[in-house]
Image (cartoon, rainbow, N blue to C red; front, top):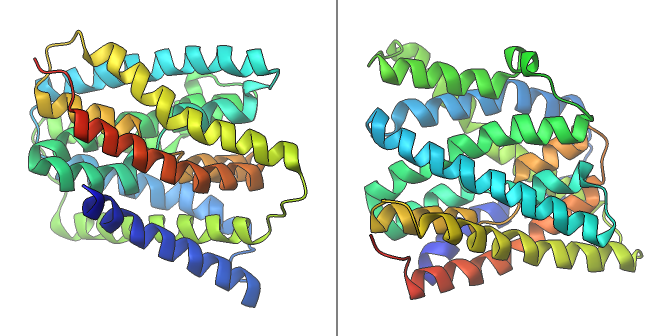
Length: 297
């Protein structure tokens, strides 16, 4: 278990470290258009490639989609109450606390732990979470969301296109698919290096920010697992599906949340700190989930 998690985490930390080094030696990561390019081109390509390359029937996918939507909705409700109790505005904190890093971290961890069955389930869960990023996340951080915004949302449109192609068993031409794969391949490295860039600008003079970041870093994986457990306990899912769901919702805060915080001029440095601090907590929670095992069907 530990080896699998470390294997998935090592590239993440190395790319963050590279971003820190580059931010201190160059201004390559300072261009604000870099984040816009990633969210407008890279992320849609990455999501489309993920949907088109997974191996799962539509009915099974629908079951996992419904479960994930329910968990995210409950997590949003519980987290909203938690933030209000602490006296914090949900605008910039709700999306990072609700949406876990199910993509570049959750997918490889689930594949390492549960094989191909876990991989397929992890991709579906991650796809739903990506939609949450660009609906709940954008809606909260921008101050409002209208359904028509979906028509201008690249990641959501990419997921819809992928679902349509998969439903009708259609395939993109090989050159187009290769292009999509290449575009998706640049996304995560740039996002992680930009996260490192933000961490390099961070100062520890604000003690209230540090204590808040620590609290939220514990809340994300612990509350995520507890909410997910309260849902999967009652549903007719396989043991691997239940375990995959729990591990995915034990993941730390997502780098996409950081990108959205930058885009909408929120507390980007604080969110960057929370992403980093939530990783070891997530490892401990995931290890506990794997050791205890999920409830069986």
